[in-house]
Length: 623
Image (cartoon, rainbow, N blue to C red; front, top):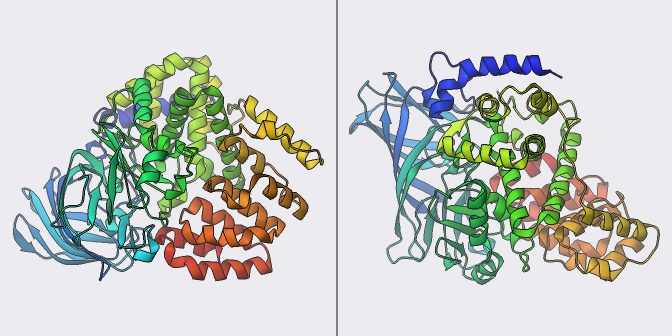
């Protein structure tokens, strides 16, 4: 471990390297004195040519499963280079115009993970580029759903998932988190369907099938989003609301009753919500992740709809991104923890403000358990367990693990515990204010942390041991962990069950999802069939509508070969596309010969219900 002297050296180097970029917050603002490495996951030259504004004009064709149109870019050739380089992935480029004149372009052969660089000749004074293009059949950001793959099963549906570097598969762009631009769009869709984007949105289907959008705040490409389908809207309050298919809208509106209160709680902690409206779109079942923090319109999985508002902390997380991630953005995917670690910490603080400390303590503990599992999975000495990652030559999705979330959040919690909550809250509010709508590297944050909070205090720096967290593997020795009082009763109940004693219904009657997850997660690897049957008859886990509990239960059922749960598990696998739930189930099936046959059969049967990103993950498991 690097001690205080080394950290001081790090800070001195970082101050020289980062001061200017920290002030402007733009990856485009790097100067000749800056030693920060270029984003290795974009082939664009947005460090030389500023991408100012995108005027997008596209048509969505469900018959050909293709988006076609024109991406009109306003640029500033600040370094007077002779070409503009942009990112594309499996895309056909029909023609390119520079300041209205047709120009010859070059589309490179694909580079693994990165796609094909598009080379466009420009002059020192070129101000606009118009790219006429069509998406390809392997555009990984897009999931095209037939009516049978939606909730209502009446109309087709399309949605995008642009994080991490998939915007380039539906828009030719400079696709890096440190590259921000404003945009507006004209989107033509089949009549009778609604289009939504990460922008100002309509609230009802129009007669023309043509929708117009505007995002006047600069955003990076990974926050570009589009959804098209039979979609309804219901208001929650003046500034918040929910979109969903008509057959899901009432359930969704009920589930998200407290979203407006969440926004208020967040604002009291770290300042105003700066994006205007905050709405949520509940997508069809194939959505591969829990939620995506697209500005003004969070995309979320229907697995959050439990009927009792027990899983809405997922929305708390996506809302928190409106400050950490969307407002202040990690400059590269190597700095991903600056996005998710801050958001996880902020989510827990919102939950504490709304539901009390004992509730938040349980979320912290479940997160710590995820942290331990991630380290065990990656290896305690793996550099992938550092906060500052090195993803050169790799898929940036390799860094989208629980390390960024949980190690990052626990690092911030340690700082809070060390300096005191009042000081840390003031620091975070100032951090969000001073870096609003800007990007930041890990090294810049360390400089800002030292200048504005630690201020060279040797005792504080030694106590926190920053290098062990940011540039060290595994779980640091000083990781904060306060075991929740409410989990102690859960542990006692589990022990009594395992020793054959009856479970007190009066105790479990008040348990939340958090307590049940802790109860089930920490069971032995394999229970007896009699134990599984008792739990199922007592608590009806096989029939639960809570997706978090169901997933853990189905994994336990596979381990114990508890066949009564298998039909419900198949139904779950057929109707859920969230990787967090799919991967553990298919992994558990692959552990036995009979399970392998089951996994291959079920995957072949339901593969097309899963997003292309989920298919990539699952095909590494189901071999």
